[in-house]
Image (tube, rainbow, N blue to C red; front, side, top):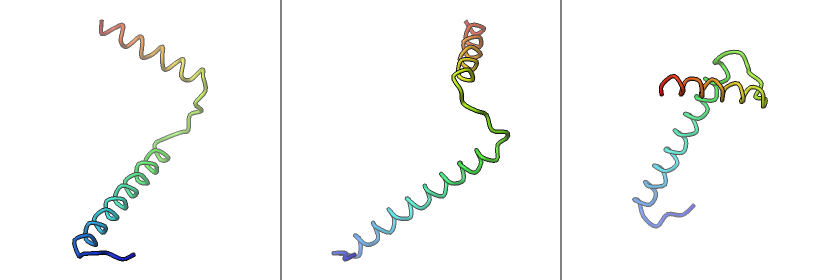
Length: 62
């Protein structure tokens, strides 16, 4: 890839480094999620139960 100036080259290096750092962080978060405990199947029943628990929590605040 040709660059018209040194500053253009430096900007490209910075962009690529930011992408790499973001990718590393994403991979870290994914691995943290995988290692966070037992897997839970995300079914409609699971989400309905979660919804009810959140509604109960909100009702207690009111």
